[in-house]
Image (cartoon, rainbow, N blue to C red; front, side):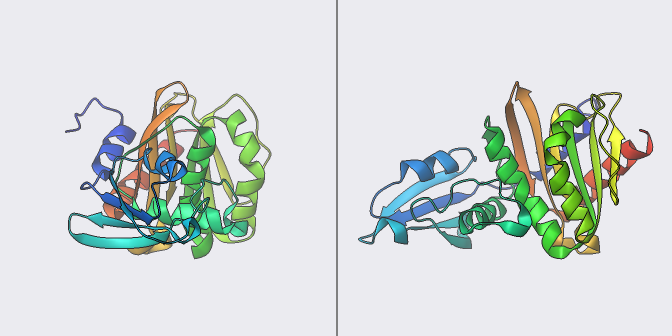
Length: 244
């Protein structure tokens, strides 16, 4: 249970965690590559053998007895990819579909590329909606430097309003429809957050909230809970209002 002196973002992350989920993979034999992807998430993992080619494998996600969805999981099809939302490969799209099905399941990642690939699911949904507010936090604005072209395109080729936060160790260029806030107080420096307000549509609201538990290692969750997303974006708006 969250306590009042815990950081608001940690409280929101913990609220976003949902009931346990089960993932069952189907194919000729268990795939170690696929296990390496799924082991990052707090799910119960099973395998059932089927006499099919490895390229025809798939997985099923359930919450208790409730069927949530299935995804093709052939060799290499679920490799995390940081492809930009408007130019996603089939593998990138499959991984983002998996992230969506596993929303509410805690994850632990110590690989920046996997974190970027997970965050891309939120950016992808914002891109496909084409309007509303997209928020992103960076430990430092110098870390944002490598993503400037992505967020410039997200804002410039859509009606999205983008808000970026980070420790002020670099002065980013002025980008139309991208507000940059200097996190002078370090209020969010331990968190990696990407949130989309859904442009008023509860079914489109989503967020990734992750905390750096040790250098380079994050514990987080992806959520589609509109109440959590509303509270998260309201909190980020408050932080933005109090920062230059």
